[in-house]
Length: 236
Ligand code: 9D3
Image (cartoon, rainbow, N blue to C red; front, side, top):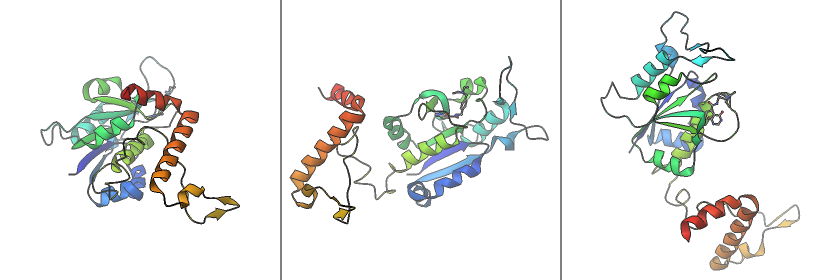
């Protein structure tokens, strides 16, 4: 009923951004219970240090194993609630690329723990002992895992029952899933001398559906032919 999402981050305030739009609604309706934990609260020394220099040298800093693992154990229920607590997912540029299929699987869980890293990354031993899944959101370089974690949460939020009014828009009909969208128009009929395509004013719903399907296939063939290849692998 409620998806508990534990987030481990040294910048928990960044997640205030989830208070708007679809994720905001998911939080209000308690479809998501967001539990933020700051590894700094588990640091041992009086400077609350959570990063240190890499063994072997090289640039940058590494998130230390002890505060991070203590934060994970405190929040993920392994110790506190004695239950499995769901997978621990590390948002990482080295992870496998996240897809909508992953998002659907995450949305079906009762609980999920996300680690948002900073600096050059986290101590490998935390990955060995705590992490079940390592995911990237795409081939570009971010400054840390927080925005990646928020992307994951927003993608999950819109799939949760009762969030969108959710029966229609999120659950796509089989034809449109996995291809690009058709073009959209609203009033007025004429904007800067550009008219809405006649077919959309016709009231002929069969003809409109056929036009949209053709438009969607055309833009997909032009921009993302890889998506059409994937579909035919599944259908023939
Ligand atoms: C010089 C090597 N860099 C790897 C490409 C180091 C590095 C860059 C960026 C280490 C950490 C980061 C911070 N990025 C993330 O935490 C991150 C991320 C991303 O940068 N791109 C796509 N998905 C993700 S998920 C987490």
